[in-house]
Image (tube, rainbow, N blue to C red):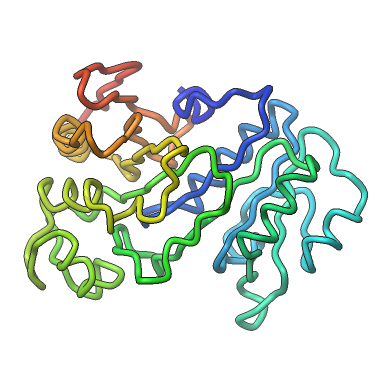
Length: 269
């Protein structure tokens, strides 16, 4: 299964999708961008914080732009089936690009220049799991979907700076302590908490959890355990169990509360 189907994206409607959390936000975002471009969508990949320059991580793109939102929209309209990566400026010795503010992104949204806008809304410094700071995540206005990403390689590791971005905040949110081992209950609390990965999400946005790096039967089982115990009151629409390393990134789509599994494929040992 591809990500378009798993997200239940309606290709005839313009949309903005924001990615929060850790554990493969960028990989998931660019994988979705490629799928959308194959469907002849005009895709914008950007951020409200910072992301790596696409050349650094060998990400797919057709157009690269830096400058103001107004200048971006004065450029030649992108062709169908293309990925535009854009931000305001190149920083960090050319390694990263700084993104647009929510107001600037709203200007781009309303222009209709792009069919789908994909936004990395916070950073995790390469960690599989994180807690948002007071000013995070920076979710654009009129966001249709917020995808909270968690790397399942966090399971069984300790809560410390090596494994968790902002561990002190993480322990407060999940009612845990430094050096506790991360298990399914801790991850569930991060998802259910108003201060967790869906912090600052508008009531009108669809909320999707992505358990990425589910590369083994053990991680898939743990992801399923968490999904089956997510509170219905959290407003989570669906859970995706994924691995971005294979040809088919989606192992399962789960609808919490209904105990309903769609398109499930158990990986072999």
